[in-house]
Length: 331
Image: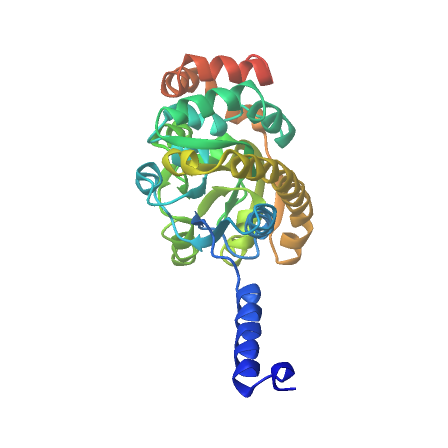
């Protein structure tokens, strides 16, 4: 019967409708929040690897609503404050120009090991810094302090065995001017430059030494221009995960909770990765030709009595008190 037959037009319409349905279901949902996270570490660094995993988990757990992509740049605090950038990871010494109290993380001979740092930064000291940063239009993600490690000194020309070996040493030092003053107190000649420019400066002889953890020596190939590795353990640094407060407040509460939960999870994994890497790198760097030596750390600490008053004034009394609550009396 004619009423039971499907015309070619009906078939084509049905097929077109089915194709449209397939296309609709196959199309990925556009993110409600397409954001950027800036850092300047190599892709084979533990931070980058764990950050990639972290943001993938956030995207999955928010059903694609929050999609954060990593860009390898120095994003700049100004861009973060203004809301032109969503997230960055920055060391406390990099934050010191905006918030001097953040430099507490780098206190010379303040923290004795990473475990002390984690307890302080995940506790009262970290909460104090987060409160102060919020007043500067930045949101520090709770539990979001990634590891870099204890700082050591490497050198091309001689081993650093005691403080007297620092006299006249041409050394690249990161951080704030007040942090660099610690090395000036020891008689060193200070040079400042970005990590990306340091290897060329070491190769050329413009500087003969540098101050950073072992993972930085490996990741930025400083071993190509450095022979001696001196175990000074004189400072600590890490990378604070920071969000633009403006952008953070625009996110739904459930998305914020997802980001915070995954930050704690993947920061813990990255800390373990980096601590293991820094422990193992001694053997790897020795195979690359570097020679390790112990250091008379007491000779370095001897200058702290005259240096600490300047440092305490720089970071502020509250940060100093919370530091001493975590590590014991200093100076």
